[in-house]
Length: 372
Image 1 (tube, rainbow, N blue to C red):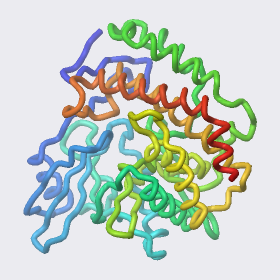
Image 2 (image 1 turned 120 degrees about the horizontal axis):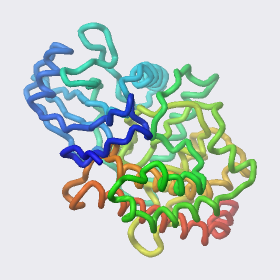
Image 3 (image 1 turned 180 degrees about the horizontal axis):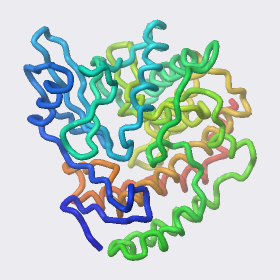
Image 4 (image 1 turned 45 degrees about the horizontal axis):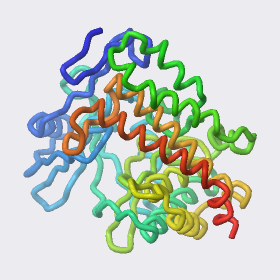
């Protein structure tokens, strides 16, 4: 089994072109500056890497006039799909006239929204800067973030959904209802991987949590509906708070789906913590209240599926982390908090499975809170 210097396993069976693994190599500020100058004709006074991202690599470019631009090297999983430029552009053109803060993409010197870089398979993107900080993890912040999300949903879908092109196939959205087989199939898909025995226990837990997800048609539809434009990754990291104004950024994954998936991911991100209990019910209630003020009317029966949706999202995200523990091609290594990318992904998967178990045990309590 060949491993790269980043620990990337070479697996022809899983998500690679022609059996070649797509390695997410880290770009330097110097290389980013060269891309900015060569592709956009812009020379930055300052260029700083943003270390908090888990998927794309982001740089803040400070210009002489005091403005800031956001330069990103896209994760190879996206393979430079035009959807990542065209869809984001369609979103900003719909949101900005409504007074909703949103980054706008800047075409390169050739008029392209996505620009090829000097390295193999490199795709870069430049966007305007939206000021703000990541919101605090609190019930009040969750409410404001949900109001922002609701405003985006309404603007993108009324009077009709914004036109979007299909995303490339890949593991970068919550739009999948996990099955037990998704975890059990690891044993055949990655049978030669030396680290497979180290994740047998979380794989078994994941399969069990997937089996325990609701089987009702209404719940299944949450992960299958493709009628409305949704963000599909509105976690806390993708909101910016600037005083009383909230903005939702990183529209890579915008697609057609069920708005409850977005609200569920927002609740998972804002309401879960390492404490006991892991999930804060009041945060969920405040998020739902905020969404109801500005968002789409999904109906009370649909909103009652929110706790189960958070559970399904958590199990699916745990599956993605376990896959990346072996492949190491998607999530960026948080070097400050984890000794290796493998341990980071296994640890995060374990927390998500703990969260799913707690949500399952408290589901009726949470449903009653929504109905009250």
